[in-house]
Length: 343
Image (cartoon, rainbow, N blue to C red; front, side):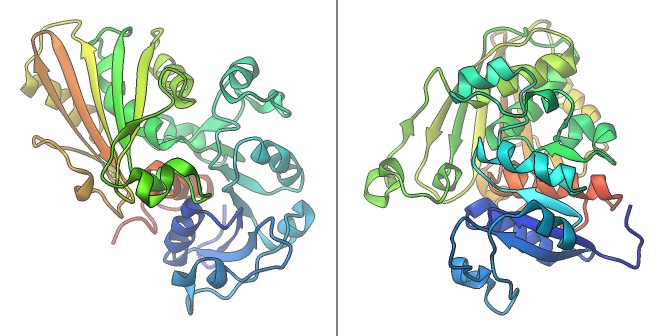
């Protein structure tokens, strides 16, 4: 644990994407952090301010190629903002050099390497660590995060869905099977690499479902909700791309297991998240605009005709990625969980 007089040296591994930029912006206002390393696969060593012009006059750091030994000499904790499969190649060597890791990829979220191979189409090259690292959703796994050396940061859709369903499943208020999740995300959720579907003329003024029946977040949602509720949970998850930069909403539908009024259900949510600084339970239907550029997840619940409906929103780049990564970092290092994340 760092002393109050020192700062934790941080590396951003894979510094070119949208989540990396959001992470850097948060870390720049974190009073206990010094960003000492940024890496990229580009060989010309660009400066961070060249990759992200909004960082001009805010951080003057040249990006380097990833070398675990060099990272260990300059940093105590690394945030790996790499694509899946790339993270599991980099993380073992970082851990071997004594660097703690918050991984923003999907490589360490699933427990079963065969499930990973089925949904991601790749053999996991570091399977013995699956199930031993901690799933980084502080609202459910806070006590396990502190002091751990590898945290698997959750996905954006998964955080929105899991936070919206966990209280109902843990209290036995909904059936664990047949849960339908309708997710809608801004275009930044698809990453910075250009794709046909995310070109402006393709996605503007249009809504499109994608990865129907085979989205990779599905087994992650099932796994975590089954773990925390002690029941075998199975969801049907369908994501949609919507024409805005950022923000994510999940509309969730589940069969009620018992009679409960909306007031009772709201009270269950308030009690479940009473000590969680970044979950806000609202009576009104939440909007993505209310959580943009924040680390909050806003949730409400409705009941009608034997169906419980949950509406959950967050900023996909912050509470859905970089903000919760900093929550995990704070807990790992012994800082107040909200440091750098509240005004």
